Amino acid sequence: MNNKLTKGVCCGLLALTPGLAQAEEVTLKAVTAFGQDTYFNKRFNQFVEKVNAEGKGLVQIKVIGGPESMPPFEVGNSLRAGVVDIANTTGVFHANMVPETLAMTLTNKPMSELRENGGYSLMDKIHRDKANMVWLARLSDGLEYHLYTNEKVDSADLSGLKLRGVPVYRSFFQVLGATPLQVAPGEVFTALERGVVDGYGWPSVGIFDLGWQEKTKYRVEPGFYNVEVSLFMNQNAWKKLDSEQREFLNEKVAWVESLNESAASEAGAEKQRQAEAGIEAIVLPAEQAGHFRELSQQAGWQAVEQLSPKYVQQLKASFGG
Image (tube, rainbow, N blue to C red; front, side, top):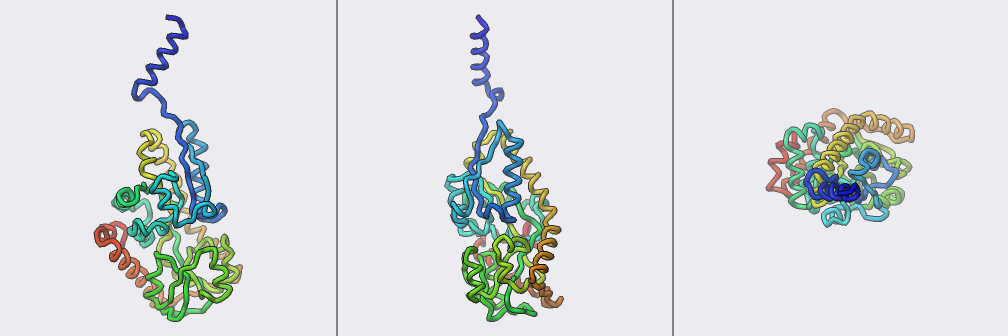
């Protein structure tokens, strides 16, 4: 047998022998629900760069666009259908499919604890069953929402205020007596300018990305909830990966979640920047602050119970408290 023939036979045997042939590099199509240069896209960019730098020949990620190419509330459906393989989004945007995702925002437990106490496994299972998604990673942890307003308040009574709200805290605003209005992020600046809304709920970081600081007078302390932005993957795409590719992605997931430890310092820096921009912090008196937080949890979990009576007790056991 000549050398060329020997080489050909060996290559053929390697290709046919399970475990010996190297898997082909997989390129995953990704989309982000957040603007390219915004805070809530930063962790995602770091994850993509890490995967692409260290995953050559194994896994690569190609970002095909952001909200300019796919409206945020359509990301969940596109991910479920396999139009994209990975998405940087929040469960709030696909709560119509998986209402249980609200618990991911209500929790004050870090992702490390949720991975240990069964909360992560439960939420991942619900996503797989209901939306054909895998919950890969949490890309924000330890950041709170705040009420930003142009009207000075001194208690947990917000009667008469019109606030831009989203599903995750709409019920809370209603319990406080405010009127929540649905306003697209791109229209909030104008709504504030024209007095259509008196304020809005938003995380402790990110308002400068949208220019809202120009039309905002106050930020109310304390904050509420735990802002959730996550990395989700189409379940079929996940199943197609071999064990080495899955292990590689899981390693990068652990790495990117470790970056969330800097959230508190980032929030502190952002609040200082807000103060320098003229946004005054309103610190509610201790009794009112406690009432404010208590009402936020009551309203949030009541919404989960109404939307998901099947899972609410399990979710409370792992995400609550």
